[in-house]
Amino acid sequence: MRCLLGGAPLTGDSLGTALRALRETSGLTGDVVARRASMSAGKLSKIENGRVRPTVQDVDLILSALGVSQAVKDQFLSTARAEATEAMAWRLLRRIGPWKHQNTIKAIEASTRTLRLFQGQLVPGLLQTPEYASAVFSVPPALPVETRARTVAARIERQETLHDPDRSFRFLICEHVLRWRVPSPVVLALQLDRIVSLSRLPNVSIGVLPLDAPMPDFPMTCFSLHDDRLVIAETFHSEVTTRDPKDVHTYVDTFERFATAAIYGDEMRALVESIRDGFLP
Image: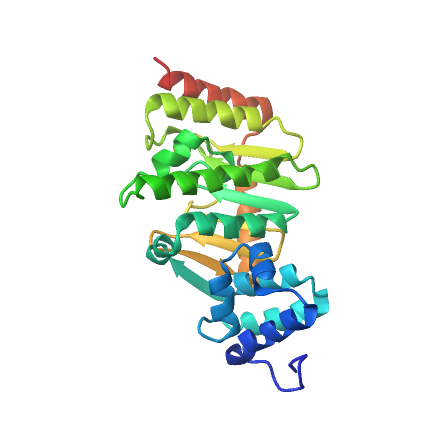
């Protein structure tokens, strides 16, 4: 592949320099691009100066902020995908600031038309109540009080996208998640009410995988599918991102197989409400 900015092959080492040249050509300041890309100006500067190697997510967000053509974006992303799978350790995200990571996910969701999310661990973040989210971030190693409040606020702010009629959301949740006693019984009951309420949005589909039904596979990890271009999966130690088409296809196939085993609509709501009633005094 030839770099757009002089004919030399675009490599990982020159990626930051090429991104800086694109920004300067656009006439946009670093502060403007960083704000649009949901990252700090300092991080953008480090990327442009080669002090930080950008992830595929970083490159995608920067190019979207610059408003480049799809052809240009494809050229740059092919270089960033040289290592198609990336892992970001949770300890590093804690060091950077978990609320900043919520803003990064928000930016990714903003460019997603169809989001498919499989959860075998927790209620999906886009469906969480503030109280449930606070309980999640209180699990050891708990976030400090101020950091937890900022992170919860950023997560709740992401939920505005659920009311965008131009986007569709498909959630699959294992039944045991609805019974998992991370928060108090009252908080969990309110959370289940929230799931029932959001399931009535016209662009939101929520399926529950019942414990007493045959399953096509094991819920090895939770993951989100952003259209058919990006997968974000979570493990105990890191968040893994892949854009490799073969990997993405594996997750699409896995999601659809689980989707056939889920219950929806009134049947799903009846199950959720029966679980909720068990947590009420």
